[in-house]
Image (tube, rainbow, N blue to C red; front, side):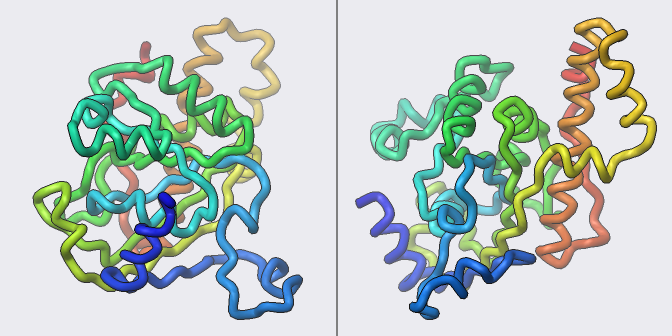
Length: 253
């Protein structure tokens, strides 16, 4: 019931095309019906953090369209108080979070859902990008959740999404949207691609105090999500753009 209106809008109003960048065709070849569209839930059996660029208010619809399974979005708590959006968010089992500071409860909820095999959705930019830049500065929260849950990050690039100044504007704007889904990226793989100095730090973890280990974990999260979002930029044709990190005071906390 929740998926049907999203699918209808995608087919009729937004004319969505989905591209699976670097994915194996084993799933398609294993079924007799070659006309079927195989979604993310059929391509991977574990939980995951789905991360995407954020250009309009209906971007969660596009991510939901490719997932094939409910996506639990982390959404600012004030939207749950809205007379219209609140009931919708609760029906989608979104996770209310506090944008003003650290929200331990929502983070634990997201980790538990991802660890249990669910999809959790987050926009690393933290807000809708209304600038000419392809990507705003990003936050490492998604990587921290994925690290603690032991699940991969799945990069998704959305281009051509309808953009209006009001939250509901996109629901009435025709568009031609392209969704590019990249391969799952695990933290262990990012370590293998990392520097030799980081590998040395792993060997010395037992001799470091808890505070240093937390700091190292947060720095690892920044490096991991920066690499994954750099892949997203490449998928969207912005390979020369650089990733910026929003605020670094949290690294010292």
